[in-house]
Length: 92
Image (cartoon, rainbow, N blue to C red; front, top):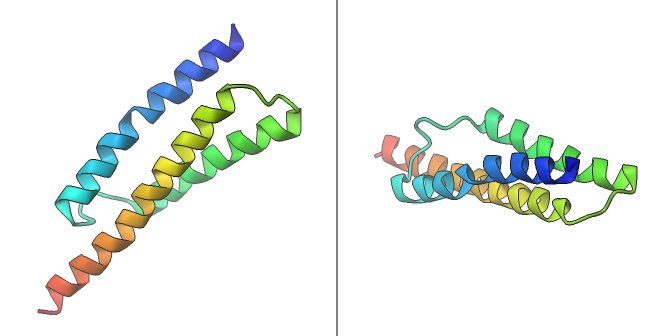
């Protein structure tokens, strides 16, 4: 039962990342984004993945941690793309 609850937690957090990625891609700006927040979330998912290895509890839940980890990574990459675009607009 604990694994099911953990999956529900990670999946519910993960539902927001595709929306955030699409927004970052479409808006082409960093306005409203915090890179510090993104790195904190990314670190949290890395810690969750590491905890599975340390505990020797590699089960299907790790898939969702890894999926979320990579979605946050995509949003981080888009943040830097958008920051570059923001800087280009300012320098014009």
